[in-house]
Amino acid sequence: MYVLNGKLLKTKDRNDKRVIRKELKTLAKEERKRQQLAVIDVLKNADVVLTTLTGASTRKLDNIAFDLGSRCILSGDHLQLPPTVQSVEAEKKGLGMTLFERIAALDGAEVMAMLTVQYRMHELVMNWSSKELYNNKIEAHSSVAGHMLYDLENVQRNASTEPTLIIIDIAGVVIKVR
Image (cartoon, rainbow, N blue to C red; front, side, top):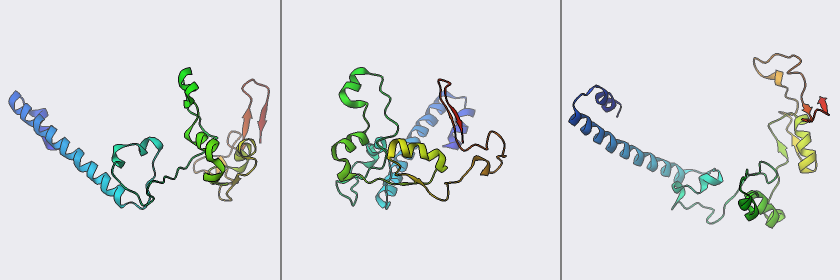
């Protein structure tokens, strides 16, 4: 295809260009087909398949049976990132509620398990969400609990990188530095 594209750019004759374009179209179609077969092969032989909800509805997963049968394991957080809904009608029909919120409301205790150790942020940053959203059940793993911005490579310790957490009330009432 690379060679043919080069020829297409150099060729002046219309008939030759048409023939090259037709061949490129055929090759592109073949390439797409091979890529799809490669993806299917990878999916069929994978021990674990992770996907977003949108990705789970892709045609690439059609006709692929997993060892879990009709079960599906979802991973997410019903207290994070609600959908942005701009239609009042859609909101009234329930589209303002995430799938995880619906599951939590219907079958929460029976089907949900909470992970309580986080591996991403300093414990002072994490403490707010742990307290406000998760009844103080979240804890920071020791590998990240004391991480500071200035611990990163090429980040110097200074007044901007020293505080762990800065809370600024957008109304200008509260400024906290920790």
